[in-house]
Image 1 (tube, one colour):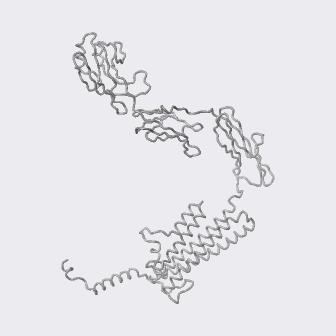
Image 2 (tube, rainbow, N blue to C red; image 1 turned 180 degrees about the vertical axis):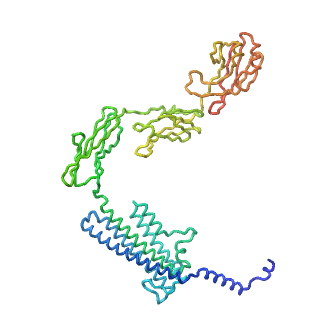
Image 3 (spheres, rainbow, N blue to C red; image 1 turned 90 degrees about the vertical axis):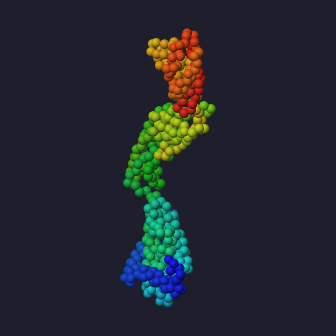
Length: 511
């Protein structure tokens, strides 16, 4: 390393090194004459394809003009679009033709072929980059190809497959390696290869033009009456009606000829314009049937039967007291949810601020996961789509505090709970007495509480207890009490399903 520092390269050595790198690059980019001649063969083949496409296109334009003469009102819109395609295709094709000539002109000078078919300097690597990149003509070409692609996409909006092809064939974005379209196509590429690629674009233009004109021509008879089967349809506005409302249905043929007017019947009763109206005074399910009659081209009247049904229900409403819209943390909050006219299987809910599980037909269990409020949204699946049908906001509350009781088993084997009153020493010592916390027999909310500690106070003092059952020391003090002595259970702590520690209050009994 020290020697390198003491003997730096001379300018001549640096120049020799740079020349070696340039020579290595030129050797790496050297393309054989066989490959260049192969590009010429491909270019000639593409020109043959272009000539075939142009002949086909001319034939299609002639057919289009004939259709327009027969029915101008019907064909004009599509012919105008086809002529727009022709104009833009010709302009881009001609621009690329001149683009090729300008590149060849830089390479072959005065010997350049105006038709861009004969190339003398096939291996020239400078001309494409000079004209397209240095002189920025590649940006103009890219912009024109982008405009052409967008035009084709706009005319094929109803055909995703064609759009995918146009996006691929006329792609001008960066390559996977990050090079621009201009750089990857023109930079350090031989003239023969670049001209062939540009001819390929011209071929794609003529092929795309042919496909698009054919597509536009096919649109002129899309609305024609061409069916091999005619079916009668009933299109109700709704099949579920509230009593007193009106059921409406449009009865139509699945394909009609505007020059012929069908006749509509419910049973033998004719309908005006196929509109069936019924005032619904009773609840229940109702069926009806009829037919549509239409004369064919041969004069024969054909009948097409139909049938349908509808449901009439009682008026219904959901009334809620907004001040009592409450759900409790830690427990299952049970809800019945339905949407009139929508089967329960097609009803779903979403809960913002909680979780839910479906417990049956129209039944849900909801648990809040946050304080404050939760939002319940109800959806009904109609015609395959989930539509929001309503919802409500509910306040999240912690469970109310329970009461505390002394629980024991009496002489008859019945479990009892008291928070004040008389009890015998024998029952307390033999029944496994314990302290419980609950809402009592009149509970409106079901929730389980676990007593974690309490204190028992008698004339002999206070004894603390971790748990719910009376311990040995407490039972020993009870045995020493006399009739009329009081026992107080206080400092009771209980934990509910919401995890909150409660102090239910004291219990006082007399021996």
